[in-house]
Length: 248
Image: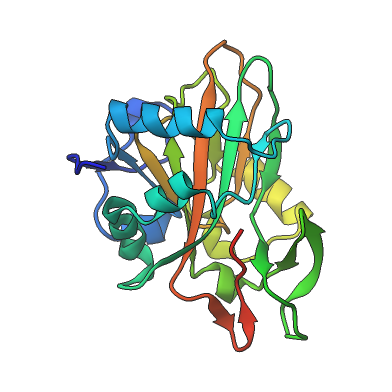
C-alpha cells in the first residue's frame, strides 16, 4: 500500500464534525480516541473492501469476526501506517491480534447499546485476580480482562465507507476510558450526565480507541453503507504473567 499524507483530528465535546480540534500527541490518552483522516486512499480502500466482499467469510448479521488470519487483513494490520498509529499509544512494539468486520447497511441494520469492550481472546485462562469467566466464540476462548490489561490495548478502525451522521456512526463519551471497568448503573449515569460525540470519519480514515471507552451505535437512517474493519493491537501477547492473547 502507498504512503498517504495523514491529517490527525479528535472529536471534542461537541457533536458536530466541524467542532473537532486538531490532536496533539497526548489527546488519544486524554480523550480515549482519535480520528485520523486519509490514512488510505480510495484505491487501497476499494481493493480491501472488494477482497473482503468476495472472500468466504463466516458472516453474522453485523459482519464477520476472527479475521486476523485472512491474508488481506493481516497485511493491512501490519501496514507501517497502522503500526505507526498504534505505536503512538502502545510504544515501539505493537502486535495486531484480533480483527472484526462490521458491516451495517439497509439490508443489515443494527444498533449497539452503550458498553465497553472488556473481553479479550486468550489461548488459555489460568486463575488470576481481575480476570472473569469467559466464553467460546467460534472455537476461540474469550475472557473478561482487568482494567490494567485493557488500558494497554488499542483498537484501530479502518473506514471502508464514510461514516456519516445518518449511517449509524460510532458514538463515544470522551474521557470515559479513565473510569476503569464500569458497572451498568454507572454506565447509565455517565451517559446521562456527559456529552457524547458522533465519530464521523471519511472513507479511508481510521479511528483509534481504547476498549475502555464508552461507545454505542445507532441504527442507520439512510441507505449509505457503513463498513468498518476493526483491528486490535497490544504491545505484547503475554498480557498478564502466563495469560497470552490468542490470534482471532
